[in-house]
Length: 63
Image (tube, rainbow, N blue to C red; front, side):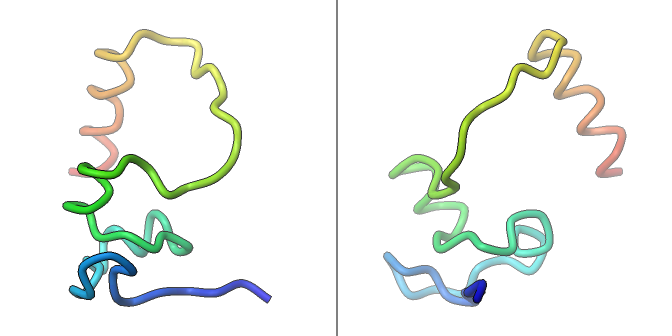
């Protein structure tokens, strides 16, 4: 069973709907995640491009 959280497990504030759409299993709001680090478990994979290119592509997808 997969658990979904609507409130931050640290500060108790609501987790932004957009964040939940991208990271449905997150337990932290964006502010707490920035302070404490990611709460997403798993291994990191190489994306095959430099960070600037990735950010440009991500921005194009989100707009």
